[in-house]
Image (cartoon, rainbow, N blue to C red):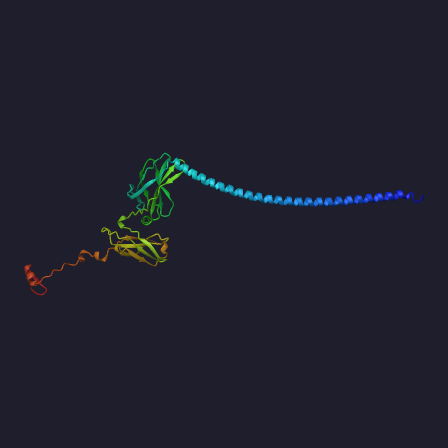
Length: 334
């Protein structure tokens, strides 16, 4: 018993140490589990936060895109509103200006320059219009011309805003071909230049064909395309006795500079078919009084047939004229 007594405290100490070790081990394991759990929770939290951030980013991008689109739409609407408001304001400030009843007539004008080239043909325009109700917003007026499909170009000088008519001379030498004025229409319009920089134009005139050779009696027929190489021409017979009856049909195809005679027809025929064309859709036609006369009116005085006198008794008729026949082919005249 005495030998075993000293070992008892050692055993108790060993047991206590073992328990402490086990407790510490348990605490460490618990702490390790808690740490691992904390890390997993933090990872999941970060993952959720990242997903939330991505979602918010996408939502923000869509919202920003929608906002930009709305801004662009608003800007476009504002521009339209501003333009409309500006137009309304200009219209209101211009005193409700309306250019009406603009008319143009023309006639050939002789040049005072004796050395002037004959090709530099002049015409005189007589323009008239109704003065607007209010001209306070108008700075000045101009007249514009459109030749065929070309753009509108101003002609003449500036016109006083208080005027309602004007005359001006215009040269046709800048046109491609003087004769094309008979087949290519011109349009004219009046333009008002406002003090705020805006412009107002009148309704264009009807088509005007400026034929400087009226003595040639040029007629522009209606053209019906029958095929790529054939057309049917029709025209009205004015039945003017002063006009010649025989007309030349002339054509001018695309890129062709000169008119080419196709055939000649009586004006009373009123229609003609033209074949063997290169491109019927790009061909121009006109009828012009023929320089040649019909065969029946070409006879000279020497070719005029004499009048025929019918008598029943030749001898009595000759005796009445104091002519005595001496044979079948000779007579004596007293």
